[in-house]
Image (cartoon, rainbow, N blue to C red; front, side, top):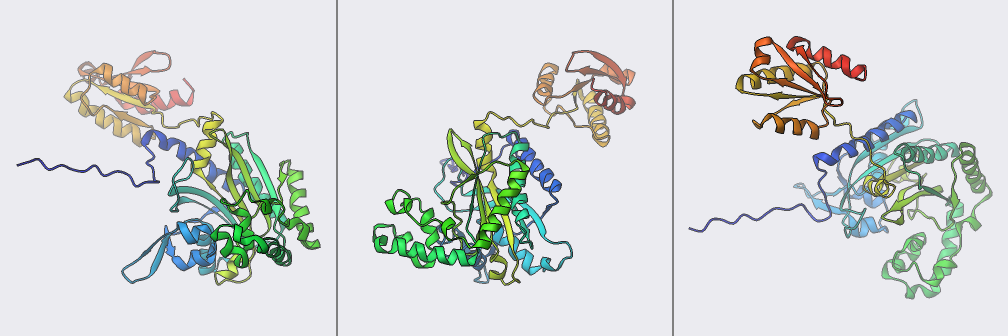
Length: 430
């Protein structure tokens, strides 16, 4: 009888594993994000990985590539259409409306999220089908100062991780009156030659012509360069708003470049829009996109409520860190490792290990019955500060040999004193 051949089940295309040796970097990034958010008084919100499909059709926009081409939709047993979340803002706003956070006394509601998103895209460097976003939303204020705060938070986050090759690009999409005038100008500009554009752009002409400016297929078309600029259609109040944002950034010492072609393609976006650019594998890439979206809360059934925020990809951040040769310090080093010789010493090592951990020390021991030399090699790989050696002689004396791995010195320490002794050595920097 032939032996059954088992097929190797592999990871789905466009996804990845974060292995144990890599996870410390992710933890450092997430820890930095949480610390920066705490400095700016943003609190964490956690929303489901899947939502009603209708949320993203209305919240992201049915003319976007995300909704038309990239969403993971499925039916549940109740024949309800659900979608793995492709972005975070719609879910946050849904929660804001559903739980009536607009009624809380402290306004604006300032929240952040960190978690996986899902889009069916062609996998490539920095772009995967499951990716991790860190994003913030400030809901409830139409003060242009909070636009500057949101931008400052994003820049502070990147700078806290050591990135220096950053470029902030800024634009204004104006108020609804500005947007409408610009929309009509775009339609008049593209309509005579719309047949030369891709099918997506043709469909967008009447529904959302601003999205044409974002098209990757037709970005080299001559009409793109001569398209009307939103800056020429800003109302006086919209210009004042944008001037206030720029003034605040100037006062903070945050440098930026103006780019009138920078757009956010959704109808409810207005006023400030921005991107933070960085290096990725030698090329300039967008690390962060954000802006103001004053119409989204009402679009999802809530009261008229202004909002502003950003989202960034941790995968792209990792590439930018690599380009700038930034290695985030791992905090996975052990305080001590126990090397034991013989069965009885192994049993005692387990008890001492438990006591060390109860005392708050990061500790481990050999579980593979290795020779002493191999156990010390494992301690080195774990970057252990101290190694505790226990054998028959140590059991008889009730004292362990404690070796300082930094300078090679060693001394005998009573079993009952090990935890306090090691903690005192660590606190004194020895």
